[in-house]
Image 1 (cartoon, rainbow, N blue to C red):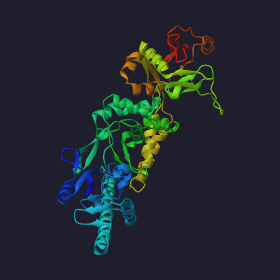
Image 2: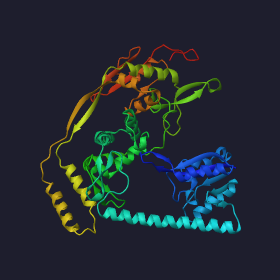
Image 3: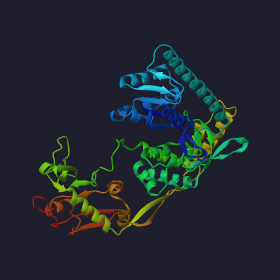
Image 4: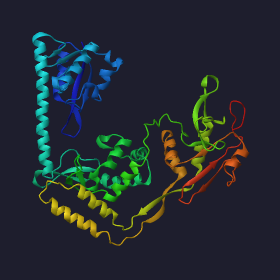
Length: 480
């Protein structure tokens, strides 16, 4: 038969992952019995997870093209397929029946089966689930003991590593990358950068996420919400179970999470296929109406940006611009900018807010059952009250150059990054077929040249208006 092997990844001595030795034996078993191994799907995820819930195994048990490539699923033991309850195993059995597949194990289990073989199958799956229950219960007891003793439980978050502590236990200490980038991540979130922008910035720095993967917006969001970076590792109830060196203070943590919570929720966007000027291009004739990419012309062979209009009717004015022309003009203009990119740094004043936020987090993280709860609670409340009359000073704002011009920044980006960069900088571009009247109406305070005009705003950002008069013809022979 054609065999798909359901396997498990294990941690090797060098810190890498590799195929579990028992699953390697499954491959030998299959070939020794005359079967052809089509694929070995190895996942970290096992336990009670169904095959369709495992990243590597999922496509092989759900996609028709892959389902057609094998006749049976082989595992070293039944617990490689599942250690779930009876309902979970029944679901896997139904999948095998519906798709005409067999389930096999190296120790001789086969499904579908009848008689004594069916009894053995049923008993084995119940034993596998009971072993999982017993192991989980022991693991939970061990974790509870370690947490109650103030010891490290679980993996460290990015930016920390595990080190030996007194008593033979472990502790968290910051890594060099953690000290460098965690404060910057929180600062960028407070400044208004999107999670996706921060992820791309981390990738651009050449810094890898956990396990060497690229950065994702959800990974950055998890960092912003993780209290460990304030020096307090908390459980699901909010109780502090371990303290460590903080990488941001409580006030920074609060401000970053407030900034994150205040943003609109949006679905995923495929930046690779998104038009360069999507969300950027506006029509100067129609009250700042957005312009979107469409296909038009003979057999939809030409790509345009078209005015979409505003309001419930969404009827535009008919203003259409070639995508290639608009993209080329904006790219040419951005590359020509020699103005330096400035950044604003806020030097926090002494308003005691960081100390207040820290004390509040300490209060929320107290263990109600601890013998010194009342004493610690009274102490923290007293410290909090004493800060009310403490002197304060205002924040100081400093603007400095990043050492890079807008043109240099543009040149450093690849095509897939440029649109996202324009959107992150809140750039707007207005475009129309050559109509000096419309341009003068939309931009009465700027003298427009044949190439463009740019000015610096008070905060150092570039405000640009671009025209390109008569330098390109569209397919109808009209100038753009």
